[in-house]
Image (cartoon, rainbow, N blue to C red; front, side, top):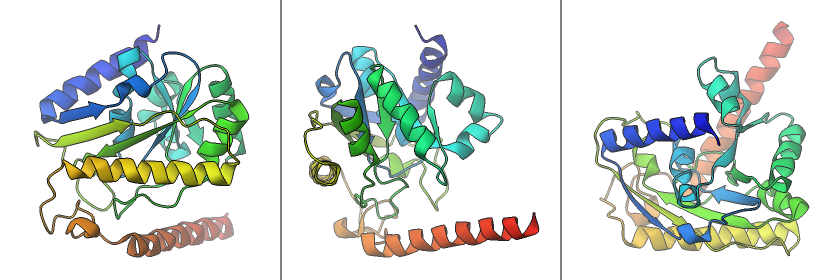
Length: 251
């Protein structure tokens, strides 16, 4: 029994209903009813994790998400994240969080990860880090590819959040389990190709008005291309690195 997680989910569903979010979910039967699994989710918005947690409830399961340490440091969100048994990730030293995730997987938990590591400003599937594959291989559990589309319309990087009653449609697809029977580079490539295909399939039944900021350039929107977004991401990393170095000099 997880009263805190259950309560948080109840509150989230109330908020989703107030916002008028319209969910279309396929493939819930691909979530294992028991045993560990890596839930790999594409990353287009700040609330992806709240939506990704809906499908596992069909088999009464919860996801332990890997999330950046800063969320746990916050005096409001921190206690909640710890109560839900999510896993803090220190980007400067990720070994501890990796070990914690593998241990949870071996204990039979569902561990949620963003293989892209950061929000995709292009809303395309970015290059993947190998962590999801390496975890699955070490724990000997499957990877469950999960793709969400429409979350970027609610709240994404660089644009105001839209948390009122927007009636936004959000599509979620859960793919078939991918067994950990390949080396990490090949497994990572397979996972990315699988999620790219799933995303393209979801987009076929979704309306994409021309010029909208949340629509990929490939579909006629004003979002940056994947290459343009990568340049923006590198600039962010450089800025964070410079800020850390400045703090070190001041201390």
